[in-house]
Length: 241
Image (cartoon, rainbow, N blue to C red):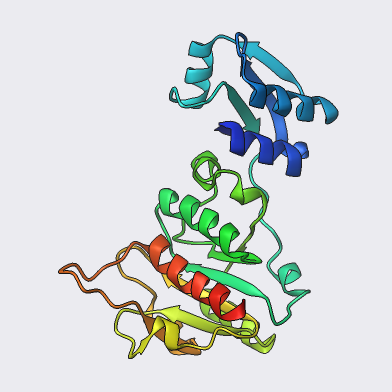
């Protein structure tokens, strides 16, 4: 099923990076926006089909009125081959493993966070995980065009593959003794975060090289998975800079 994305950032990044996935482009026929004009020039350079429509038609296509005057129809997302993503591992390699993240909103914001932290690739399990959809495209605000995402059959087995390649795995765990900034983020690493309700599964924690926690000083002892991932990813950025 084709995906629809809208808005300046998502539209421009999709056209610039994956014009082969763009099937149709709809724009507001009365637009006066310079940003849309720039996007249309980019679309023209790739010989993409553009159809002017009324604003209410755009709202129906987008599903809301926040389209900023442009909507794209994209072919379904093509996941990367996970093994091909291991070809260029080096001391700066930064991966992210998402263990059964089921909320599409979280997935989209996670991808946006990963792009900002320079993550090379993200790995999702094939089962019990949110998929990349039009919502993911929208919430990533174009970041999905830069973060390579692959699906893996068995997370525990994939962790063994990463370890054989010299990748250390740092896992977020609320019960860990070590605080997040006490871990060593040098060399090729993968940050592992878990399900919104249950966290990372026990077997995966046991297979991780380091468990780290983020102290919670309030009365609630849970942290949004995107926030947790951001804290660990940017600690890696800090230690490597």
